[in-house]
Image 1 (cartoon, rainbow, N blue to C red):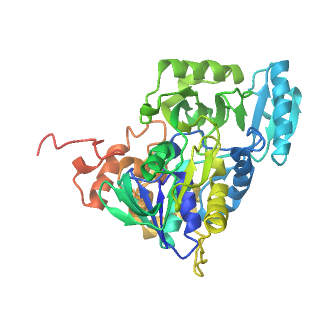
Image 2 (image 1 turned 45 degrees about the vertical axis):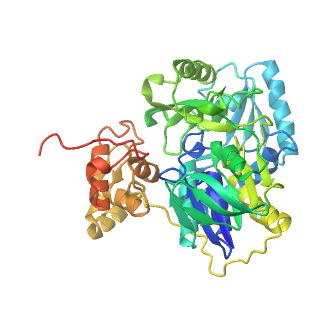
Image 3 (image 1 turned 30 degrees about the horizontal axis):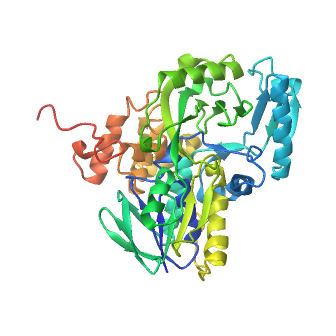
Length: 479
């Protein structure tokens, strides 16, 4: 049986990894040059607890379960999660009523460990919060991770279990026979298919239309962010939410997995044709500054490292659109994956295989006897003891040469990232955290380009940031 998964974001990657547990001819097709570079790359990186999702919604069905699955998933795939918990804080009596409603909704959604903390308890745990805080909803299962690393780890494990990965190819059509897809057509090749899984993020509606399947229209919701330096990373110790609005969960203050501090996102709906507009705006960044200072007045915005924008898919029903097509007999939509899509993704992957493919579509899947669920990540030298590091350097001198000083990333780690599939500066960045630090690659990017040039056998002018046209240099100044 030939299965094609369209999209290598966190949803598509985890779906493919789940499918790789079975005897299938499985192919992932991704239009970007690397894994996790769409919606997955620029979001809040939160594992949500699940209290915010309306009772009975698909979001509620999958969020708490997905959150639970991340513990085993992170152990098997060797990516980092930190269950630092989250607070929704109330600054007035009206907001405290919302906190109580979220608590009751969370209980209905079977979210474990929820508590409402009073002002004294809140300020003991988070002393930098606004002193006017009244109460807060505490969710201990909430956490943070690196979404792109979840996707990379899932794909690496799927590849080790026989999956094929196709990058830099865009799906442009399908061949069908008797309301069934027989081939997936890209701008470069075609791929036979007995089953197609549509996990194309912001462009999943376009893919469904090409297939002649049901869809919901998707438009981008812009979320702008401000990243602060690690010097102020301990300003808060948990994810700090305001009370949510009808539009979004609000503008947050939260630690990042590597020790920084993230502020955002905004929530501005854009027209459907602006699915690749990643500009930040002065208005959006000012909104973040004003809003987060109300939550945490002591924020030191002089420690800003970078600003950036992410786009997430929004749809009229404000819920996931998941299921087998009735119009196309072998086509499944994993669409409209707005927040909490990252959190829900492992549960959706299980639902895809167990409920949609096997029960509803009645495909007979055979479990692989030799499936290996484990994948080891790139060893971070800075996290080792000095003695362990010295022993590795004796065998591999590249492990002793620092390339990125901000995040203490060695040449050995960068070489391994390239050998695992990184072909661009961003490919190295998202696998190693090089260029994620305060200088944002100002000092290390040229060194990384030289390593890419050497390892790939390319001229430096062929090394790109993230897309075929994003070259850094176009030749030598002098011979």
